[in-house]
Image (cartoon, rainbow, N blue to C red; front, top):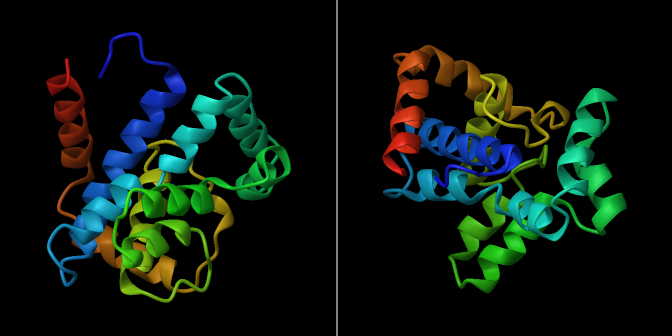
Length: 174
């Protein structure tokens, strides 16, 4: 990672890596690397919004959390799109598989239908719960997510090791 990276981008990156590692842990029944890849890319819409509005977008995220607002609604109001829908469109434009695009686009939907979408939700929510970035997870109330998160917390050997893995990846980037 570049040494002079914007604080928002650093937190976004750490959230994405944590979500990917957690999703991989709970998506072991999915095809190889699908859970990791989908969770790694689930927040790409946030990066696009940041690139479009490098001052305004981090302020919008801060305000939504400070005031207890729904981040996705704030994004739609300010940008006419939320980061999840935008991420799905970006991945679609890259020609990635439809299941992956849909799982990313619906990672905040309460009625996520595929196992991959639920795994991405779980990785996202768990990483945010552990303090890795802000993706709007407090707002999504998917019925399957709490039980999936509980199982993840029971099965994950050490959350300290997650932080170590993320730090090692970050430091290996320079």
